[in-house]
Length: 280
Image 1: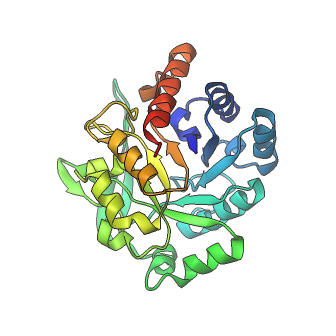
Image 2: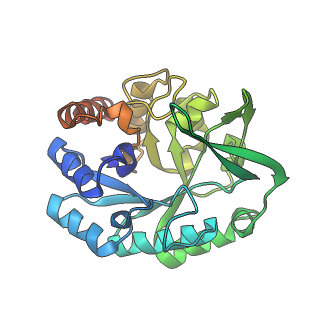
């Protein structure tokens, strides 16, 4: 199953992403919860599924805390996302790893405004960290209770003043092995200089969901374009009997979102690439 993430076109409305995915021929949609109410109202999302004939294959917990009407802590957001997945019939919840540090948010207002997260070198072990620590009973219990699989996502390596900084606990292949279920994000592996084929071989038994995008020094590039061997990776997934969804999760610029016809051509090209290689 090849799905399109609403995050790939977050500059578009949710209904428009469903419409484009259906027009091009994707098998489903992954919904990333964000500040927009239409990413987290179950009745509306179920209506989109019915209108466009596409299932929601996964619901992605919010990236940030300032989502109006939702908890501002990571564990609370995870629980709320699980409830939303139940309500829309999505089998997978994508969750992020806990933060290692506190951070300051800085805004650069200039010709090209930027937003920066500056880590504060103080260890951060909030309830979400404790929930995921140890032998993982809390996460397994939540999955069992809800009937939803929670795929913990590997996260990128960031740079601050040119220095590499790992913002997240459990964010190495060895540490990720503690989780029963994983979402493997290829572009995030690229930021670490890791080969997605080798990491998949290491964690194959736990991978239940895949985020597919390339890396060329920038994250979330179109799958055919970049340094990562994603054609070989897709073929390995298929040969290994992987049964989960592959979600295309790029950024709007990688899909030429400034022009709808160019965008349609871009997402059609990505789907053709995935169909060509994700076969046994």
